[in-house]
Image (cartoon, rainbow, N blue to C red; front, top):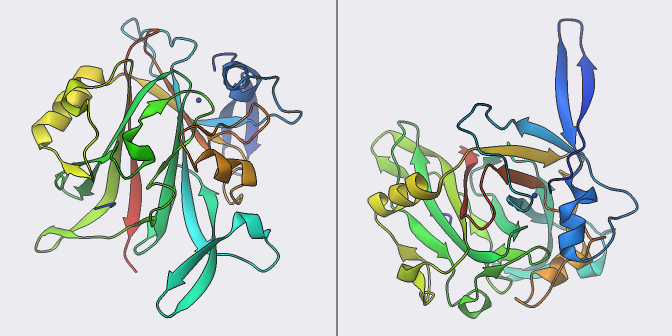
Length: 294
C-alpha cells in the first residue's frame, strides 16, 4: 500500500515534426484566481500549463465554477547533491548512516521505478475538507483493499481543512515518504499502479467526523459509491518545465504545520485538475502513480 483559476489564457503552440503537427493548448492559471485566492498579485514570472486532458464537451457538462480546481504535486525523493542548498535537504537515517535527501517535482504521467519513494502535496482553490483514499490497481482492472490515508491523527493532528495556499503534505512532515511497490493480488497478477482518490467536501464527511489514528481500511463498495456520487468531468494540466525542479524553501515551510501558507508569489502545484462543478459542490479527482518493475 502506498503506504488549479478560471482566468483562462488559451493559446496554441504548434509543435512540428517531419511526420505530423501537434496542437498543444496552454493556460495560465497563476494570473487569476490562484494568485488572488492566495492573497496577492501574481508572480512576476507566471507559470504556463499544458492541458494534457481536455474537459469533455457536451450539453451535459456543467461549466466549471471559478474555484473548482485542485492542485497536486508528486514529489520524487532522491539523494541531495552537494551544490543544493542546505535548507532544501532532509537528513535521513539509512541503515547505519545518515544521508541528505531532497524532493523534486515530477509530471503527472511519470512512470516510477519500483522502490521509488514519493510524497504528495495537495492544495484546493475551494475552501473545504480534504479526504485521500489509496488502493492498488492491477492489470486486469481489479483493486486491492482501499485505505483512507488522510485525514489521520498522525498528520496535522487530524486537521483536514484545505484552502488556497494551504499545501497538505502526505505522508505528514514528520513521517517517512511512501515507497512504491508492486504487490501481487494473486499469482502472476502484479500491481501496475497506485490509485489516489482526492475528495474535497464543503463540510466534513459524517463517517469521518473524527480522524482515525492511522490509515483506515475501507470497503470497495464505499469507495465506488463516493466516486459515483461526487465524480464529475475534469481537465488536467501540467506546469510546463516544472518537472525536475527541487522543492523550494517556501514549499517546505508550507507543509510543516496546518497553519503554514504559500503566498501568491510562491510556486504553484505541478498538476491542476479543473472540474465541471458548481460553486459549493464537492470536488473529486482520481489519478494513478504508475509503477514498473526493477
